[in-house]
Image 1 (tube, helix red, strand yellow):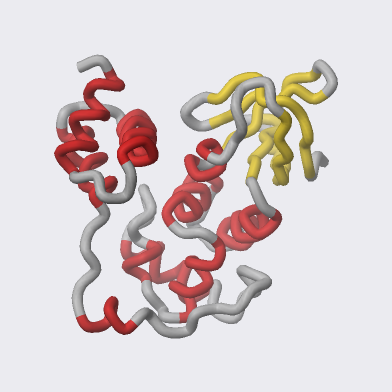
Image 2 (tube, rainbow, N blue to C red):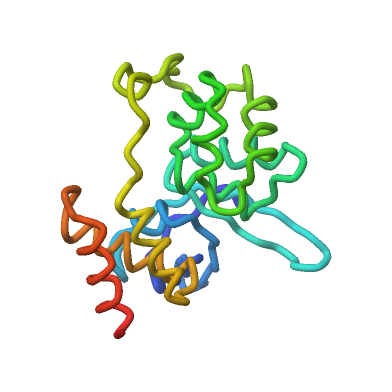
Length: 204
């Protein structure tokens, strides 16, 4: 099985990338965080690969920017009810370190922010990952003081994505244009500015 790919970025889609390795193009499924970190087309990248085989789909390659991302992906899929799509969704909203912190705090709400992960599945993830080595680094065992004293403020990007979905935009497209707008406008961008930029990108 393939465990790592080093090659040129040939194409980047909404959920996958095509990596050219010595003339052979490998289709690699990636989360949004990984796709955003890929270099420009034609430039070389290194992806850590989790290879999976099924009779219905054949060989599928899942790519990650770091070994820890791949490790967390494997751990998540060992949990009943968590398939590749749900595992990718969790890692799109939480890095391995953030996931380890959420598990340590038993913060199912943080895990539940992932698309397609409901409260019951989030609880199962937090419970079953307890004491599992999700990350090699130190784990923050408690939430920051400010987070305990007041509810966390919703991320503008999340509200913008929800607004676009309410207008009939598919979730993957909404996330793509909002994340691109956030990267361009900066952390201080308002929900309204992100929505406007997202609609402009979609040509609406």
